[in-house]
Length: 316
Image (cartoon, rainbow, N blue to C red; front, side, top):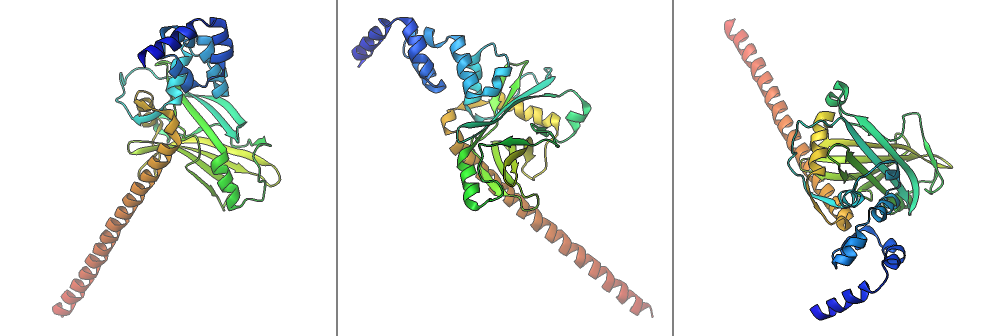
């Protein structure tokens, strides 16, 4: 086996590096290119070309073309990998003046929406208010011809969106030069909102006892429009974390232990279902406690009333 591997390596080394760089490596995706770079020192040198990884980064996530990255290979590794365990935040007092979000929405491989949003994180309003980052303004709708359905939404349409709609929401720490994709890639749920008439697709990543949720809302009769793309961080109880606490969560994701991004969809779906099951258990437990409290309150009230009546009758 070792002799065979050595022979292959020797054969590859005889191929001109321009051919390898221009006609072979440019056809590979990120994970394959990373694997190739580990096979030999010769291929490692060729596959570590910054220009090669920069083109790959921009083709995989078009929104990142508007962002400068000193190390595109590190950026790809951060954005592609999936969170295994959130890590402790190093240097918690380090300045974090700005959070960058690079977002791409695709439907059946066609780009629907691609934007970069920069959020100032130093204001008192951001730190104390529930975190919500909106990609689309409240009065704006983004027309798209890629998504089918229009006003004829059915269960099959929602099922089609669940399989055809993909999203990446990459948060970037420009000071620490780390990044992470908070999306599950495909929706964990797709359902019709009967009050607004829109269809909500939710993408999620569970981080301990909270969940980073990206909601995509589509609407329209004849033409489908993207009405909302927003990020929130939700607690187990259903409430939202404020900006200050959310930053700690996001930094723990960027600095946490990563795994193979190829299992992002399966892992995200499984963790979301476990999270929702725990949320239902917490809600049921809270309702039971409130029910017991209500019963005790009524019982004390009745006992007090009976005692008052008894005292009145006794005093006569």
